[in-house]
Length: 411
Image 1: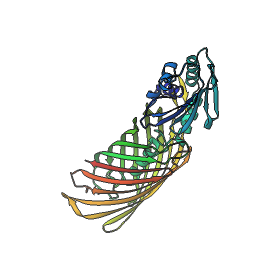
Image 2: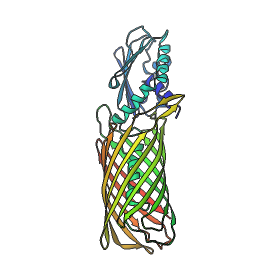
Image 3: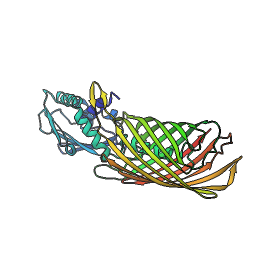
Image 4: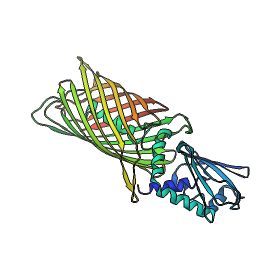
């Protein structure tokens, strides 16, 4: 994570490249009526491009003193870089959305570029503003603002574990004399597509999530302690990102059909290619109320959570992204027994709808609604076989759409 400010510095000083493939970062540059356009997938591809020898790969006729103007679309945030005057070494750097307007003059144009790089390294306040603004305009920000971001996945994961429990089922576990231990593992795939909004083009990203879970079931029905360790990987037009978290969930019944849960988690994400990283802390309280019929159940789930990107110290400099959101998460789940069985275990199907609303830091997508369906076993307390469930869901929210396929097993 210490490389992140250096990568940003290189990107902001390096707005041009000759990549004809689709990428996350787009640019347009002009020189003496000539226009250079393209895109690149990663921050690494852009690094150091603005030195004189690199500029000549974009404009072969460049002699080192022509006026050049450019706009880099940094994941939805335009950045303007220019040598505005013929024969001059002054480099201008502007981010209109943040009211940033700076200029740097060295003995050579390469020295001016180095001055900008040094400025970016020493002004963490600018980096804070950029990160905070990017979650509101970037459809593929790794920290927050879209279904494949760390914050959105954390909210969805917390709510489902708190509402439906370690088994993702509304069934009451038979009370026994002793507690029991269970382990779970799953695999989730989510494809997200965003709308073209503001300065952001339509973008797509795929995330792969590996939830690993341990649950201790106390003798009392629906009384559980859950340790959750989901690991994630995201791919966006050639750029990749990684994330992971550790969460502790405690579920306790108030009445037989009403369970209250609390959770606290620590999370982190890092994408060198997207030049984004954060450590996030969160806490939430949830309620799960169940109405039961002879062969069906309806669960009302509610969750109130707080998710905040924490202050970091990077290269000896303190950095606070200033990203914090209160999240209201509410939904309904309908589960019903099916006439089929898997061995000795009955098969059930579930349909649910979940709505999430974010308040606090402005996001690219401030609300999302998920509709889903799952099918699998609901293990009785006496069974020694593993629970197996598969599911499919669709998410529609502000500026985004996504679909997800998932598989889970408990043993």
